Length: 451
Image (tube, rainbow, N blue to C red; front, side):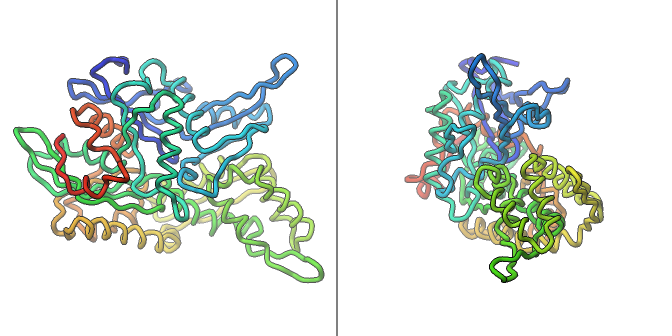
């Protein structure tokens, strides 16, 4: 693999909620993902996770950190007290999230991002240079969370990437990156819808592609996004199958009254980003107090054990695997065991689709919004490019088949297509004209952009 320090190499970074991919584009038009050798296998994705722990160094403790699959190794090994953080991209646009304390050290979102990028660089080796001239970073059309603050998120992104030397990075909508990669398949002019399903957001871009002198040219017509994607679907499974077995819907006694256990604990538990913070937010102590007064304390004790002994990641994997299985089968089993708690529950696709029906409806509304903003109808879209693991969920696939017809759908690599497109955009002579810019966004949305 060529070094990223070469003048003719550009880098695309798809920083995702669940996984991160980095791609290199060379001057000859070839593009490839950086591989990470772990456990004797080369991986094209780097799990978006961090694990912190303390190590004795003489008379003092030294804070250590790992990212990606090495973070998972450190977490599973569990030889020392540690903090495991996943899905932290979800906090990017949240004004409510100011910082978290990790072994008494203060970490803002941008600090977590910079720390993660350093672990990414460490494991990628010399192929990854954040100070390269052409570095393009993907960003969602709409960030995840309640009332997300777009400007705040981008300030944090720039601070985090700037801290590792990428102060001059360009930021491009993730579906635009995917569109640019997919456009290389087109042999004629076409109106294209790109649907990018991540862990935290679902983003859509309508683009008009034309060919001039044999080269593709693109005109971005509209973008739309919603903070609903794979993690939201996981939430529905946890909320319906797991949380009721951990005390949701139960009661506790207080001053002679019987009161319902607050649902907010289960809401945070079912969101992977929030679960990582429950141990340090004070909620664990609150749960212990509730367990002492609970009508049935046993489920709450299981809940406390899962949080206290860091079984959340194992639960995340079990839920994700069950969801993926439903893409192929009508029914599967959710199987999970932690301490003395075990769940083996039947999960039917029909039930799952009923649970996510409102989420799918909001995604459909967001697709329609993208078309309306572009001033086109479904009949005007010649090709629909789907990317991201959630695009394989049958209910999502059915949504696009019903609107556009199966013959117009195409799928790319569920992990690599965005990073590939971002890297290819970085290799163009006018890469910065694709960049997100809040002040010029509306003008640029209607401006023809040459590749």
